[in-house]
Length: 107
Image 1 (spheres, rainbow, N blue to C red):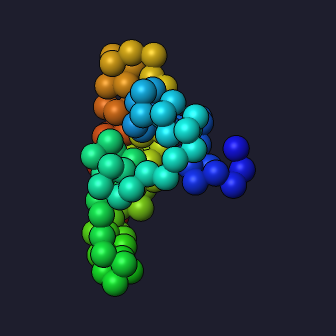
Image 2 (image 1 turned 30 degrees about the horizontal axis):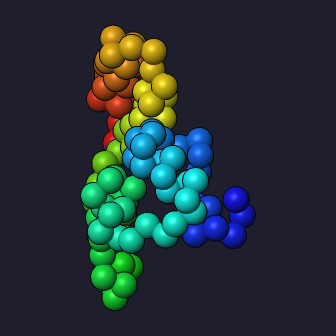
């Protein structure tokens, strides 16, 4: 529902992130999710003070940037694909395929 506090919590992704129970409650009630609850249910990775937000974001970006661009791209794609993997076996097979490709690519 546009304009509600939880509008940014998308119906397509939220059950995967926080589980069905939390997604139903937040989306149907339209209530605001406080930062401590968001961290507890996995809606956010961590809580950062507003004054530290830019510094923390840059630090994380720099950490990610130490990895090969191909490895980062393949990992992002793999995460998106494996969210809907039909089985653990299929997910592991895809991950194994991705592990050999970046190792062979030049940095």
